[in-house]
Picture 1 (cartoon, rainbow, N blue to C red):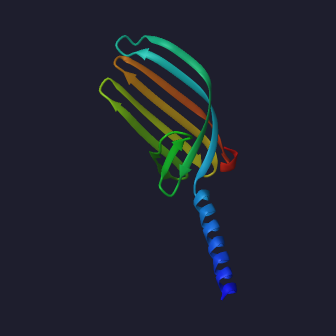
Picture 2: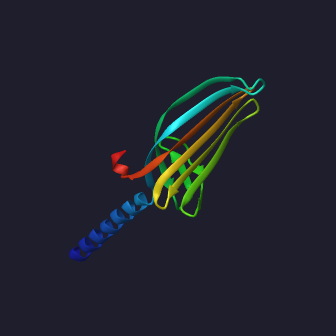
Picture 3: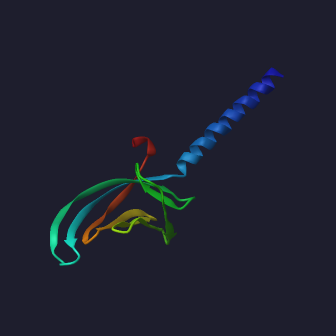
Length: 142
């Protein structure tokens, strides 16, 4: 009787442990690097107030089962998967202050990504665009 209980307990532990790692493996972790450009402009006068170039380095977490994506430490956004390309558009704010962002990541194979964000506050807009590449990383490296 004791031996049977030990075997069942061992089997249960193996199943529980393997099920937990399978759940963790469903998420895809990508580290992406790209070239960033930003522009701040007055929409009333079309005057460009500021322009910058730089680099962006982000980690994205993708849940393909739920069709969601997020920046590491951010909020989940709904996403679509068409022909191996994940795309997501998020909108926030209302009235005088709004923001819209779009993410596109090639997942089959993992390669290019683009990110665009447009922030509007009254008559001032800021546009951010990034083009780069991604690599899949192990979740334990984060």
